[in-house]
Amino acid sequence: MGEVRQKDKLAREVKSEMLETTPIWCRHHILDLDDFTPAEIELVLETTDAMKEVLSRSIKKVPALRGKTVITLFNESSTRTRSSFELAAKNLSADVISLSAQASSAVKGESLVDTIRTFEALGADIVVMRHSHSGAPYIAARHMQANMVNAGDGWHAHPTQALLDLYTIREHKISIKGLKVTIIGDIKHSRVARSNIWGLTAMGAEVSVCCPFTLLPAGLDIVGHHFPRVRIEPEIELALRGADVVMTLRLQHERQQSGLLPSIREYVKLYQLTEARLAQAKADAIVLHPGPVNEDIEISLAVAQGPKSVINEQITNGVAVRMALLYLLARGNRR
Ligand code: CP
Image 1: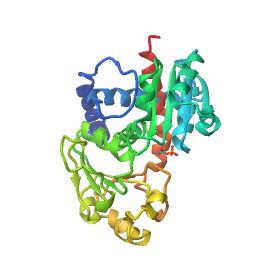
Image 2: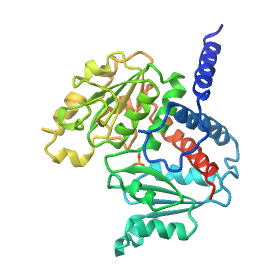
Image 3: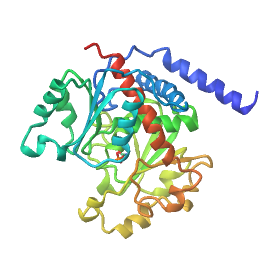
Image 4: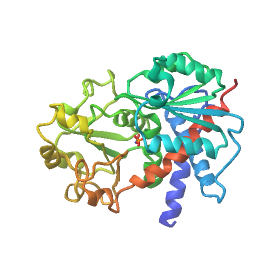
């Protein structure tokens, strides 16, 4: 049997094993991946396959959300998440309202709960929210009947980013189970790392994290406390050895002045993902980065733009994954 056919057979077997236990979608909000089952994640990935097929057509629009209203509220800057959610909702024929908190009545003192109630009075079916405070989407979700999608809250969670990362990995590796995934960078302040740790471990990957100890979240080494089991390896060459997937994280500018790093030059020297270091990973390893990328800080330009990089694929897949999530929420929405 040819290699391609063997891969197809394996992919079908993995999918059918996962889907045997797939529940009907009964999730009203998407807040984090910490309580997603492997079957639910697989359902999102399968639905994303269908959305990718829609996006391959000359007219990339289906009527799945016709008559539904999606409101996006971002009180933090965003390029990828905001634009891909808007595109996703429009591709599904929803009516879309996009609001930045700076342009909302929040600047006049309106509370988050009042904003959400206003959205519902306007007929919102789904609210997509990014907030600088960890937990803000959870508070909002308690006060709404519409669906809430967390588009990133503080340091806490970024579930839709993790799902698009899982999808991108699966496109290259077929099965996530058993993969060695190394996450390098500012884990402490990274909502992307947190949601990925939940999603990757749920799908059976072995996750290693690599960073200075000052950028490690408290409790990461206490299994069952805050996080599932991960390997902590501060030496980058050891962390990369034999990796199937390497995920680098943005070194947030504000951390450079926070006293958590001796200097940016030292961080670059010890933790930048370079071509030489990447040679420790498997020959067919792929490199992810959620963006925005600080070129030549956490990742060298040569790696970011090199043949192992799937950074642009992550951005493209963001639209299909978010279409899948909006579709699943709307389908289960009985309001
Ligand atoms: N990955 C990500 O969340 O990027 P944006 O901040 O541009 O949305």
